[in-house]
Amino acid sequence: MKEFDEKQAIKVMRGALSPESSKLYVDDEILNIIDIIWDWYEDNGLLDIDTEADDEDVNTNALIKHVRKMLSKDPDSPINPDDVEALVMAELRYEQSLDCFED
Image (tube, rainbow, N blue to C red; front, side, top):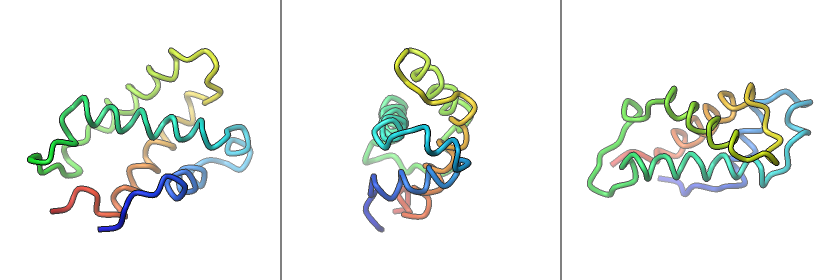
């Protein structure tokens, strides 16, 4: 299993956006989305060592809704709500490429 690399995750997430959208966001703003995703995992028990999480355990619709909700609470966030789904799905694909949830 490869280790999660924030810089690589950000690169993958940027790749899911149009070049115009990608230019609107600095890395820290995309990293904030990664943090929100992992906080959601923790809140939903998906980071527990004894949990054998797999793709079916991640409710992507609930996760995307949560990320949008958290970003809406930050008036300084420039992330367009229309870009959230692409960013979240790209982050999930990156995790899958690492086999993060494999035994």
